Amino acid sequence: MITMYRSPARLIGLAGLALAMLAAGCAGPGGQGTPMSAARLTEQAFVPTATITSTAVPTIGPSDTPTPSETPTPSPTPTPTRTPFLTNTPRPSPTPPIIVSATPASGQVRPPTTPGAPTWTPPPLDQAMTIEDHYWMARPIPPDGTTWASRNYPYGSTNAGRLQVHHGIDLQNPLGTPVIAVQDGTVVYAGDDIGTLFGPIPDFYGNVIVIRHDFVTPGAGEPVFSLYGHLLSVQVEAGQRVTQGQQIGLVGAAGVALGPHLHLEVRVGDPYSYDHTRNPELWVRPYRGFGTLAGRITDAADNPLRDVTLDVISIADPSFRRAAFSYSDTSVNPDEVFRENFVLGDLPADYYNLVIRSGGAPLYRDQIFLYPNRTTWLEIQLPG
Image 1 (cartoon, one colour):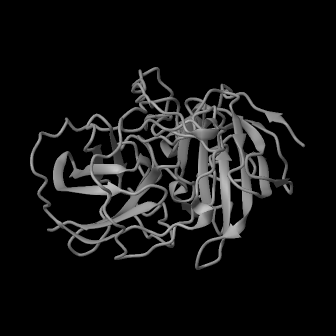
Image 2 (cartoon, rainbow, N blue to C red):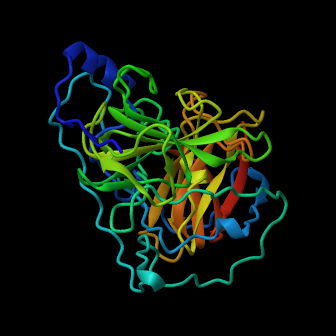
């Protein structure tokens, strides 16, 4: 067993810091509440300006059922800027969470959810396209910590153009918060990334752990790895077997980070390649009663659209709103099964209004029901 500590406040050379910040994909505590920049929509009929070419809800198997050991809520994380130097620029404070009136069995804490149950009867599952989910990972933070991903800087996004494309998800937690393995596996690497490159530059993650899991990708059968970055403490060693839920380290701010948080990645095929990532929100199981929205947004020629915003607003309570962002470029990979270009996880099952924006202008409007414990799949083709 190895326990290694590195100060998150350690100094790095000015030139190195400049390069690191220009390439950065993580940062310190930032705006995490409801990441919606558009004003509240006026009450009006939602008339689609484009056609949905197909809508599907993937099937879910017994292994995808969320377990009581997981925890909840959607929305926090770090937020740097593309300036090469650290600044004291104030960052937005988190939006107060929505209070949940009921506590699930087994002491499980749930994410903030829309008050009350949906007022409409859920529609039957649409089997126009059947895609099998692979929610084979648990949360990397224990239930008493912050277990949800940042909504302002998800996988494939640039935080509204302020950051480099994100290759993972961030979970903001205080220094020293335990980090646990998302599934059984074998530690491939545990230590700093100064001599062994895992990111675009040395010392990008500071202290990093990589685990190879006991399952492979559906279809292609490639090995799957989880990566844990910016750690304060590494508490496992290469070659060690770990089990899901086992503590492997502590949350830190090492490497290129402006505040304490855990950076989680899923890599496929090559654990050392920054170019082999996949969206963790398609691997980490939703909370019970919650689901994931994923799909493809394309133009008339079926080309994926980059950097468009999909606002998701609860019909029952319009104050509950989230935003998804289509992947900014091809430096991040879609899932082999889904071939998606946007994902929004940790949504309570409910009816939602959807508004697709680009440059602030609405391009598309519709209404959907998000199903629990599975991925609700949308393919939206915009005209012109």
